[in-house]
Amino acid sequence: MKAAVLAVFLVPIAVAAEIPPAERRSGYDFMSRETRAMQDDEVTGPAVLSLLDGEALWGKLGCASCHGDAKASMRGVAARYPKVMDGKLVNLEQQVRHKAPQLAYESRDLLSLTAYVARQSKGMPIDVQPVQPQLDAGKAFFFRRQGQLDLACSQCHDDNWGKKLAGNPIPQAHPTGYPIYRLEWQNMGSLARRFRNCLTGIRAQQYAPGAPELVELELYLMWRARGMKLESPAVRP
Image (cartoon, rainbow, N blue to C red):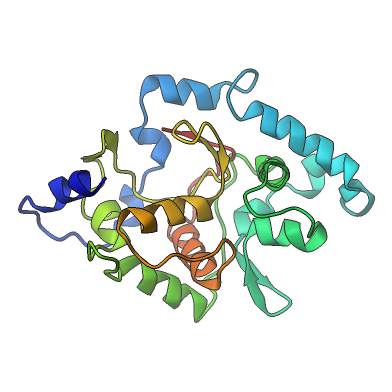
């Protein structure tokens, strides 16, 4: 991983600015035809079982007693997270855990239920609100060099998107499909898990799932992906 990262950054490059809205693309656009087909397959695709589990949990946990049919009540909800609830910035998983605290971070049940809720907003435009000062904190995190490799998120996802890293194309870091099924993981995972993977790769300080720093970063990435369509649950390499 370290060698692959250095291979990208040791060549002379022009430092790019933040990607203009008109040039922003989903990670779907960078995937192979085969991986796109997996995401598009709503019958036998790798995320289908998680959606079925999530639908079953919706009934088992009594979500319908307050919210009724998820297909109606949850439509558009995922497009508006992270958001401030009771004075605290929370993402969609944290809001689900607020109602079902027994579901642990990164557990199959939490990911399945979150994916099922997010699925009801598939195809809808992301519409998060620019909450301050958390948005500024998330943006600062994205552009801050850190870790033993002294790298910032922006150096990959703004300056070098479209190039290859460890054999995979570098996307623009628009979180349009979380929770996702990642082929590398062979299961579902959250955006926080993806953040933690990146931080491990650059040998940077690690944060626990649900840490405010990760939710602020999620807010910034969702805000800059505003107007892009949700794909949850997506499939990625």
